[in-house]
Structures are given as C-alpha cells and as structure tokens.
Amino acid sequence: MTTLLSLAINITLLSVLLAMLLCTVRLLRGPTAQDRVLALDTLWMCAMLFALALGIRFGSVIYFEAAMLIALTGFVSTIALTKFLMRGEVIE
Amino acid sequence: MNPQLESLPLWASLPITLLLLLGSAIVLIGALGLVRLPHFFQRIHGPAITITLGTGSILIASMIYFSALQSRLVIHELLITVFVMLTAPVVAMLLMRTAVYRDLRARDRRPIVSANKSKTTTEVYPFSSKEEP
Image (tube, rainbow over all chains, first blue to last red; front, top):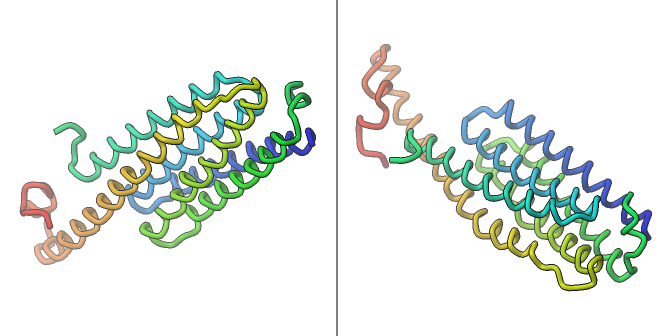
C-alpha cells in the first residue's frame, strides 16, 4: 500500500506539472487577451495544487502556507488583470 | 520517499491514493480542455473543473494525510477550500463579462474604422466615444 501511495503522489506531481505545461501553451498561443488571463489564472491554481502535492510528498505543513499565499496572490492578480482589460485601468 | 509513509494505516492510505488519482486526472482533463476547446466561452469550462473537483479532492487527501500522520484532526486546508470556492465564481464572472465587453467593443468599432479608412476617434479613444452597452 505504501508503494501504491508513493506512486499516486508521484503521478499527481507529474500530472499537475503537465497541466501547468498545457496552461503555458495556452498562455503563449492564446488568440485574445482574456484567453491569456484565463490561462494565467489556471496556472496559479495548478501551482497551488503543486505546492499541496509537494507537502504530501515531503510530509511537511510548511507547504500549506505557500499554497495559501499562492491562492491569495493569484486571485488578486487575476482580478486586477480583468479589471484592466475591461476598463483600461486598475484603480479608478 | 519519506519514512512517514510507512507508519500510515490502511484506512488512511487507501482514500488518499484514490483521491490523489482522481484529483490528478481531473486537473489534467481541465488543462486539456483549456488547450483543446475551440472558443473562449467553451474554454472557460476547463479550469472550472480543475478549481472545483480537482482542488477539492487534493485538499481532502491532504487533510486525511496530515490527520493520520499527526493522529489529530488537521483541517486547516479548509481555509484554502473555502477561499477557492468563494473566489472561483467571482473570477469566472469577471472574465466572462470582460470577454463579452471586449467582443462587443470590437464588433462596434470595426465598421467605423473600415468606413473611414483612417484612425478615427473611436479607435484612438475607445472609452470616451459612446455609451457602452
């Protein structure tokens, strides 16, 4: 069971990395600006999941705080980017 | 691998394995949808499944893991769950409104530019020209 669990953790890390790679493809290729913002938001979410999976992998609670910070910063940056795309400025 | 995994009981490691596999599959499916779907309003559904089901299952796996590891209830991952569940609809709404707004603005601007064959005030100052729909 332990080998199965470690295999599942490694599969999770690899697939989240692959998802981040696909988001980067959309970020570079995206035809419109809102596509790029959507890809960047998904990239933040995948980075948060990657930090959580690293926390399970190394058995440490420190990674939880990193994941929390990544989630907060991702939300704020996505809101600022959408506001900029819609109105042309962030703080009116 | 870390040696703490050996001390994990079976009732904890089985759901952790299943939830991690489910979460990784869902995250991968969401990213594939982001890349493969043809239109923006279809592509926004891909990350939604990543944010709700993928994040939820990996967070629950992390909760079970640390609860079994420290043999007490560790539920501070609920903070991330609540935060993500609260902010995901806000982000999706703002992104969709931005996309609708930009599409409408591009459609409104195109005939004016093509009729005059030059830079009009609508093109240079798109925000001050007229009332937005």
